[in-house]
Image (cartoon, rainbow, N blue to C red; front, side):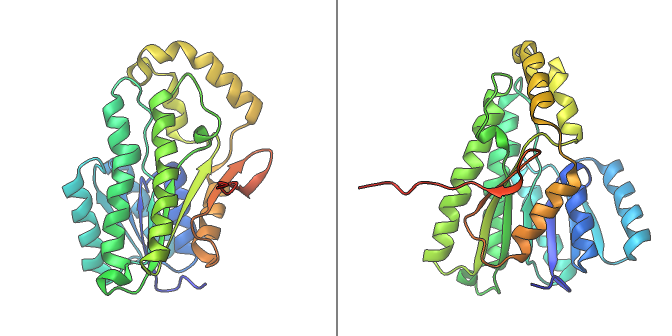
Length: 261
């Protein structure tokens, strides 16, 4: 599947996994809109990408994905500028056990909102041309930690929502493929924030347990996550898939046993 001329929107696109994915999309000749809360980083990132890929291929929109109206505006701006939308990557995420409501807003509510907005602009039910949605979960959904109970809950939620929506897309003939991506520990700013008491609250006391897990399982580079993401985007056979990426197994898929009657 060629991405030449396709338009992608990536939340959390100015850093970490999002930044690596934006780079890969531009290398595949897609147009990309980076949505990120960090204005300085977003503008710096856009300048670097303009220098590498030429102006007009990449746009930055400052947006707090927890603000539903602002997120809707970002989608409208994307379609207003490029005339279409083909790929949406709901990637923005935080880890904050102290303000756990915010963690739910960013990690789960905004993924649901982002998926519904993506469908408004891509689904055949709205007379659109179809497309691809990838929702970023985490291996925390499979290897939970006492250090991050609410983060873990949100990442479970992303998988459940994504798989159910993938079934809805088939039954409703949306023409949109919807998949989930579950990386293990990735070398990103988010990973550094887990040692901060302001983020973790009383769960910061479990940080040594978290560090031991990092040592045991290893830390991935964002480029490998981007590679998995590009596979989910370009392999048209993947729908309702839950891709896992770990140091030990690399890119692989979770399988679910069918429920017996």
